[in-house]
Image (tube, rainbow, N blue to C red; front, side, top):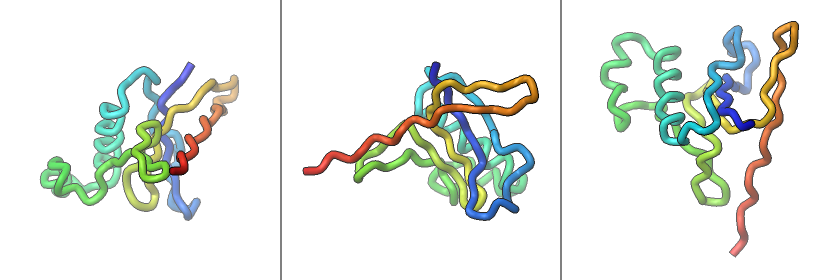
Length: 116
């Protein structure tokens, strides 16, 4: 069963929030809806109350959520939003938690770009 998994990612582990997994969504949810949710989640975590007012307009938002890119082609199975740390959403398979609360999943491989 596929699931949208949203995690905090960073180049500096000291910047990670206490919970790496930010959100779990149904894998049947459309990519554009997930993109908007990820963008709102990042804003609620990272922006001040005053910043949320102008940034609600996507063209004024300094960190709009964006789909991935594979060889110049938009890939909607991957969404990123933010700077450092940033949110990364992607479709994963077999998301499970064990009795002690540890979460595991299988990452889907990114598509390979087609050569001309």
